[in-house]
Length: 80
Image (cartoon, rainbow, N blue to C red; front, side, top):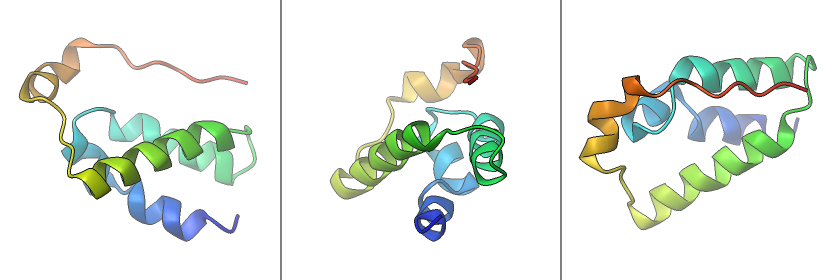
């Protein structure tokens, strides 16, 4: 995909973990399944990409309560 370099840069492990909003393992799974054509997750990745670019542009950080309590929430699975 033409956006692969941008996706890999913006949705890097460091950026995902520092955001405190998503689990890296789940984001990595989405990227891998899409790139391997196991599932069409382009819209999901586009949404994540836009969110992370918006957060970077406006220097938005997750509230500290989100960072502290993120393990309490179960990950949402995306299936096609």
